[in-house]
Image 1 (tube, rainbow, N blue to C red):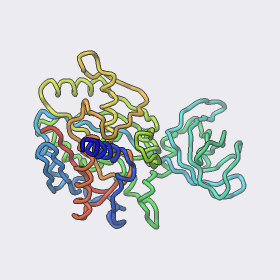
Image 2: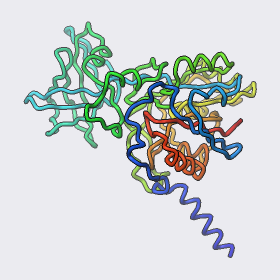
Image 3: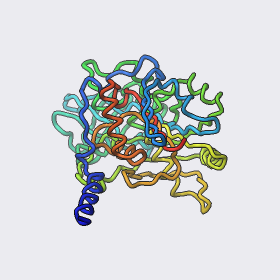
Length: 376
């Protein structure tokens, strides 16, 4: 008998790590294709792990969940217009997606050169040495071809020009692949696919939990005695990379640049010492804070950090800094769903997702939100 129960327990443990067990049915019409009319008018599912309850409300009521003396931490990264459309020397059309904001490597004879990696979409893949034309002020040369459709490229633009402004003029914000519109991006996306506090350029995808925070709501939270602090994690294209390992423990994440400034580390330390709770806005913020925990001093106090973060969180991970999490609804079988399950428990999360589907919630980047409470 004992062996039977041991086997059952082992099966339950293995199921936690089985990729297929993180699948869930989602009607296509519940994948949000447009943002809500106003940022804070999204719906909010409150998953209270302390009282084992669920509540349905509006995001604008967030103040009612957070106590004075708590600290709200956000990711202030800014999405750059990483998608470019142009043509090859042969005249054929080409589309590229810059995977990182280009790094200036050389300036001579009035021309700047910057390098990065890109995904290239074309009827015929360009060869190394090929020149790509995007505008009178922006060209690129393919330096080398990499696996998975990637390439090392070198951009050329006038030394008197600002690359960010060139990309703003000739590029577009890369929306996630599950946002499928016949007419593509709208002018609204340039503003609504950025958080109101986005100021450090470097992401190819938005930290979407923060899209719900309107300026009036932020001021209301501050007026209620709730702290507000910022970190940076530049979201890479790897955030959309599917998990292909049936045992999720075998998956690895692409590393992304993170920064925790001194003032944020100090705000977190003070909040914890005073008995306040740390609320992470988004999985990128949660990963940044938990990575920073590994750089704490001997007393467990956070320090300022700037590093590459590849922290991968799935059930079994024990959170060290984050008490509560505000997050959107994530794709089935995704590393972001594993992170949420690590915080709240897989069964509880999937049950909440099932209820959200039944209640008609909107999913993914432009969709509704969850507040996960593990400490009240």
